[in-house]
Amino acid sequence: MLQELEILLVEDNMADAELTIRALNKAKIANSILHLKDGAEAIDYLFGRGVYAERDISKLPRVILLDIKMPKVDGIEVLRQLKASERTKVIPVVMMTSSSEEKDIVSSYELGVNSYVVKPVGFEDFAKAVAELGLYWMLLNKPVNNL
Image 1: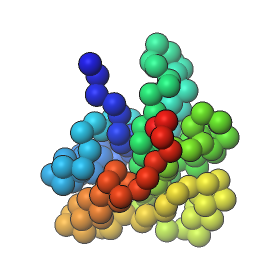
Image 2: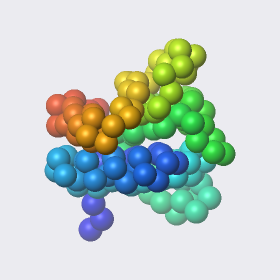
Image 3: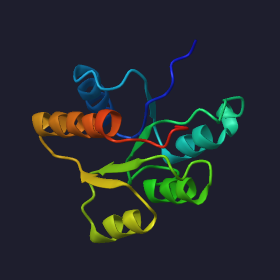
């Protein structure tokens, strides 16, 4: 039996993605993490399109860690589409990005992001922040029952 997806990581920077996955695994926070490289792939995955057309779209992640600045489709547009859909709007989304631009923060919250985190620059601080995010969203936060 396939494991339920717990964390969907949407990140185009491979170094940040690898560090995020290592930090979550080291903290033993999530059993199942899927990394997608851009917003277009995330939309296809979540809505069962393209290469994911055969995927069971009733299986949703417990939380999405989403970068803003990505090729093809940016994180703001992914968030817009997620929150516009009845099926996906209740998935908690954490914008995890290097952007501290006010317009990105405001746009994210206006569209319904659950949390906005600016990635720390240093390796240790980054790993600690990811572990704390994972702890909160996977262990402390109470999700909607059907997620």
